[in-house]
Image 1: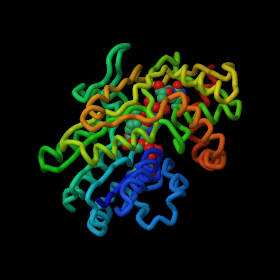
Image 2: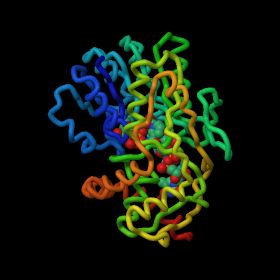
Image 3: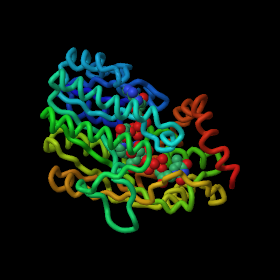
Length: 340
Ligand code: NAD
Ligand code: DAU
């Protein structure tokens, strides 16, 4: 099965490309990524020299280029990770989220249909379901109720995927996963941002009361679920993915402080994220029972290993945090931190 993976220079996509190459030694993986601020070829360094991994710098909104790649490489399936992925950036500016997540997905669907691609897997998120109260978990049947520009764009993309399934008979599957953590995550997201700030003894900006709950999963467990759904998922279906690691943000931050040998005086409760979803929790019974998926990583060990990875790879983080990242950090945090 020749695969076209989009967003394969990002955090989760690069982990998936590694998995796909291990799982299918004879199959080609065409990795399409525009290398936005979040794309990084260093994430793929261990694949250098692999003749079955073909990296192509291209934008998924370029429908003609996507069609050419699909035809030239006789692609059987698309695994679609490419997206603008950070909620806070979608609050600062929503347009890129509409462009890539909605228009880009639509262009890719059209190219897939024209090329007769056998299967289209849309990598989606638990955020399409909205926000939970203190009890319960999202099921695949939970009505979508996106609340941030990011989740609105992912929901719209999911709707287009389903529309192409129902209208054009395209073989599609959708995975909706909870919060990922692990190596190579861009340090705009909670865990790497807090780890790197703790290393440097910088303030840790916790939004609001810090009692917002996220359901954490190791990136490799997510990728294994994606691959199983690609191979064995039922056409037209949605599969929730989560590893039952619900934690309030304060617990995660305190654990990071302990693992980095810092004390709690670094914590700053800063003004909240607008529209902040209170709690996510995934019911992943379907992918467990129907496809036999099991997460392999324990959260406490996985977080300790992640801290160790960032400690062992300072150059990776230093390069990312130069230039444009500094401007983003300033825009997102300077006035928030000044307010504390
Ligand atoms: P990321 O921001 O680390 O990577 C996104 C990648 O997409 C980057 O390499 C970027 O260069 C590429 N990209 C962006 N726009 C593009 C375009 N127009 N054309 C081609 N490439 C483009 O994101 P991530 O955290 O790895 O997330 C990957 C996917 O998984 C996203 O679809 C996201 O919605 C979904 N997801 C993420 C999480 C999470 O916790 N991070 C959880 C569930 C689902
Ligand atoms: O749930 C899946 C989603 O998880 C993915 O679809 C998104 O792509 C991914 O970015 C992630 O979204 P979140 O908004 O949940 O992740 P983030 O790491 O930005 O924030 C996690 C929690 O930590 C959230 O409650 C906000 C809080 N937070 C985050 C940052 C960056 C802080 O308190 N301070 C911060 O500086």
